[in-house]
Length: 277
Image (cartoon, rainbow, N blue to C red; front, side):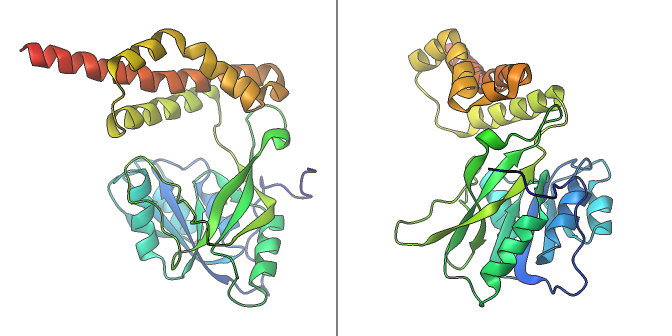
C-alpha cells in the first residue's frame, strides 16, 4: 500500500468549516509529553470530544493535552482494560475512538471517517483500521503494518474488557465490522531504550496479572524460548524487512517477551521459598 500524501508529523487542526463528528476520543496517559499534544490536535479533526485519562504524570502531559484542546481527568491506574472502561464511562458520545498517546489520526483517516458518518449513524458496530509504525530510524513500516486494530466503535454495542491485562474487545460473530483503509500512524518509541523500558513494564504486569503457568513450562521457556521469540518477530512479523534496525528491534522485543517468563519463574521461586518458611 502506498503511503498517504500527508503523514502526521504536522497534525492538521480541525478544518474551520468541517463540524466535528459525534465521536469521543479517549487517550490513556502517563508521562506522555513526547506526543500527546499532536495526538490530541490530530484527533480533533473529527472528534467533538477528546478525553485524556491521566494516571499521575509528573511531566507536562496534562498541560500540553489541555492546551491542545483535550479534557483531562485524573485517575490512578486501574489496569489496561479497566482504565479504558473508565474512559468509556466519561465519554459524552456513543461512538468512540480509542487512541494511545502515540497514535496520530491522518487527514486521510479523518476524511474516510467523515464519509462513514455522512449518512448518519454508521451501520457497523466497529471499524478496523491499519496501524503503521513509524520508527525513529528509517521509513514507516508499511509492508508489515497491523491491519486489524478496531479503534472506532459504538459503545452501545461493544465495551472494552473490564480487565487488568486485556484491553481489546472481542466482536461477536453476529456484529458487522467495517474497515477504514486509511492509516493511523503509530510513533511507538523514540529509541530502543524507551522501547525496552516499556516492554519491561508490560512484562511485569503480564507476569503478575495472568494465570501463573506451571513451573516446568516456565523453566523450559526461560531456558529455550528466547531465540524462538526473536524469530517470531523477525520472520513472523516481518521485521526483517526493516533491515539491520529490524533485527535490533526484534531482539529488544523478544527480550521483553522473555522477561515475562523470567518474572514468572521468580514468582514460582519466591512461592517455594515462602512455603519452606
